[in-house]
Length: 475
Picture 1 (tube, one colour):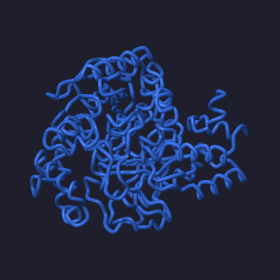
Picture 2: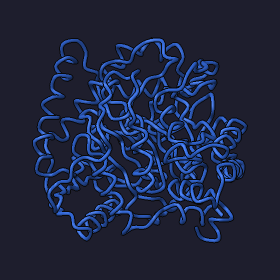
Picture 3: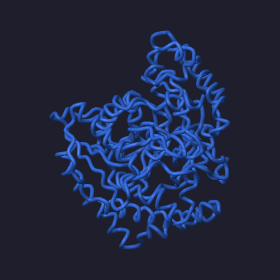
Picture 4: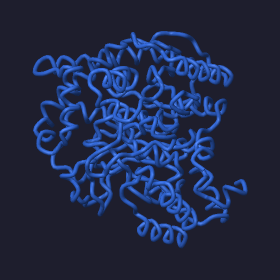
């Protein structure tokens, strides 16, 4: 720890916090108090955390200090998104009608964080039904990006991304059905890996009905962090099995070694969308970093794109329309309902036999990638074709929706395919509207999130962390 970090433990990474506690240089209570003080200092402007768990956090920290080391995250302050169950808290999902939906038990992802020794300090914001790439709702209000109001905090885990980058907890829980971990990572400069299908157990004890088949197969739980090293520390605990998820895949975090050099398919293809120069520079920097680290980076076009993305999104819209339209009409705000009307216009929902055929075609897309990844276990791709967009851009009609989501083909294709995909900042762009990080995407072979995290660590080693630059700007 540097002198500054020792005086302000909220600056420490999850790995540094856990190591300092194990070594006796820091207590869980001191780490928790520092994170809570940081939350009190910066959250009023950000509105990233919408429910403080301060008293419960202090009690848990004291209990951890009085006992044995419980796991790799012993004493590490974390936040939890308001769309998963945490005993005694409201699982609001950003919806006013759910303000009193109190969780009877912990979701598996929360239980696994607790088993690993983490200390939840607050619950983070999400848009209504966690179904936007921006974060605002009538119940909790807007979350602001710590880099400034010229850029959205992303969604749906926008509160998580803003919180972790602002120093409110060393790790932030989030989830992702079409980009909801990677959008906030890109917007705020965080690092994340969207796990693949079945990797992290998922279930909400408060739920009244099961989710649709596509939602079950596309939505995953994960973490946002300030460094790839913190993901490597925390993710093995997050994937611990839970019998409440019958489709969880009980594999170890690290798979078998692969022959070196590991081959990386590199593409800048944005499928007709103009690639912004700053995004191109970020991709080149990432490719250079991987090559310098010993990866074999080759310009190759991966298969089944952009068809997998477009078919996947229309299929998800079809399932959503069939199963959730009445719920949205009953409890969604006027802005949210208008948003879905635009979704349905741009991505006409598949229905009936057409929806079933699209779901069947998913296997062909996934098979093509599986064969491709025998040769190229990793792919380096754009995430968005342009720097992250401004707040409420997705509400500005067809043009705004196209910029915010229509160009994100590389994002939601990975959910449809069930593949792990990470986002790591590869550049800090000084744009006319203000500075903002530029993230790139790393796609991994099925169940090889460890390869994605290793590659992101190599990029991070070249680029450097974003958090210190952000904190200097925040003051």
